[in-house]
Amino acid sequence: MITIDVGIERGKTMVIRKSNSALLEMEIMDFFHCDNLPDRAVESNCLYKILGVAKVVGSGFTIPSRKEIGGELHFSWNCFKIYFYKNISFIHS
Image 1 (cartoon, rainbow, N blue to C red):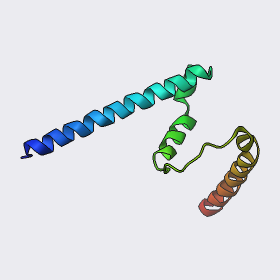
Image 2 (image 1 turned 135 degrees about the vertical axis):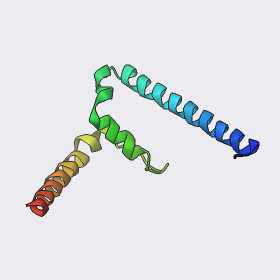
Image 3 (image 1 turned 45 degrees about the horizontal axis):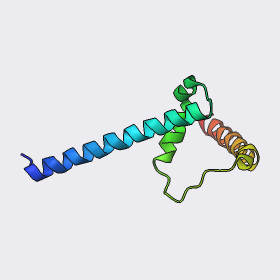
């Protein structure tokens, strides 16, 4: 049986999580509407991947610039995918 203090702390934690979740939902909605992105994009697997990785990144992370996204990061990502999938298919064959 849990004590009253433990029950209260658990309740506070749940309220904070719900509050943080609501704040994140509003920020996502604001991003999509302010930048005029289609609503269906929120169902994209890419968004789920971004949010999943974002959970484990520290507070020192900085968002890449548009030049980085269109240039070196795009090139690096394509090279990584080619290397990764080439090696995975080699391992499985």
